[in-house]
Image (cartoon, rainbow, N blue to C red; front, top):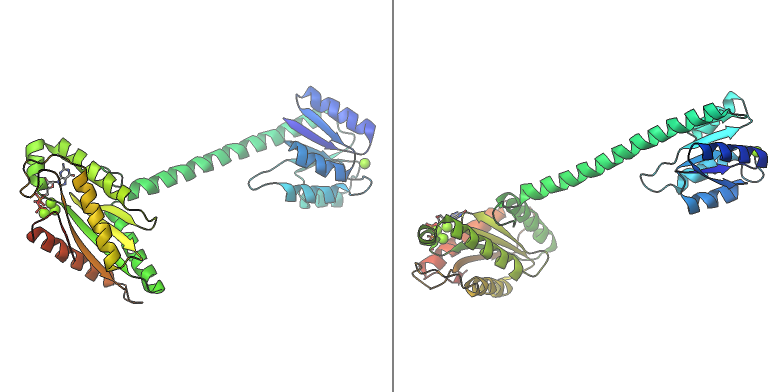
Length: 312
Ligand code: GH3
Ligand code: MG
Ligand code: MG
Ligand code: MG
Ligand code: MG
């Protein structure tokens, strides 16, 4: 703990510094307001003892300036230590930012008790700060958990729904196209039935990771839409661009080369994709439902036309 003593009278300063030293505090002395402010910036003390009558800046002005120097969330206890005894001075001292007001000469016992009181408040304040930080962190973690899919770690349906509406509106506002992809693993039921649910889960994790890694733009998002179905939102992407992305996703999943002896279309796990692209209209907040239906219909076509393919 470090205390800054801003006091122009040397005998008084020496005495107080000595007393603080006995309490286990490291005392730094400044002999006027200006150098007190400089010392505050340099030393970042845990406590300030501040005289009022000094050449140059008086203690009231110094207190105000010190409060302005505190960084966000910081608080340094300021105790006036002065020969001025009027109620008005005490009142003003508290108003300009002082936390306590002691009248000289102050006994060692009183000084010690007052410093202890300030230390206790500072400690409580610090504990509260730590708690607030932990709460913030826990809150962020909760938000993350409530929007992530438990198995794959990518966005869940809830987050997908939120994002789709948000991106729909954004693209409407900016006059940009929005693409939606619905994707479904081919013959996943026989995969599960033959290799077991655990292997099925591992396969879904690998597919999710690959989809996420293959999408490049920060605004792209992929979600687990349901069991073995995934959905991707591609903002600012027209049909031509989206077709290329969909094709890349299809190839990336095939490229995983996860053996699937029970697929009727391939020897490895594959993906069928349905693509829908629109230029959202302003005010058409329900238009994304049409987009979903359209992507779903395209996915159905992809299944019907042989799977492991993209349909629009
Ligand atoms: P299609 O090519 O027509 O899509 O055939 P499919 O067998 O994939 O279609 P279907 O929808 O009948 O099968 C989906 C299967 O996905 C059913 C279930 O066994 C499996 N499944 C769904 N969710 C999970 C999951 O979380 N983990 C695992 N291991 N399997 C899942
Ligand atoms: Mg003085
Ligand atoms: Mg399915
Ligand atoms: Mg199906
Ligand atoms: Mg399927």
